[in-house]
Length: 100
Image (spheres, rainbow, N blue to C red):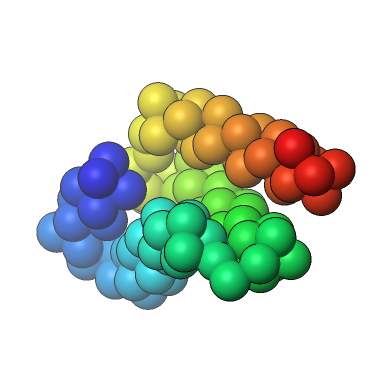
């Protein structure tokens, strides 16, 4: 939910392009993890989590742009949470591939 609040703050500051991209990628992470919970096979589970990981990395990119641009706000806590989330998703993918 933090990503939605951050996107709303960006939109309020008329930073709509980044806000829209960040909202799409940021909310897609959870959507793909939710889809993975109902995967039809282990391969499908891994595939959906890989998509979630890609979306998380895209979200990380948009947050990085906000951090580097003087006219944009940034949220270090959100960035830190995202790094932890990427690590967690990556560990789950590795474990699932091993059959764990």
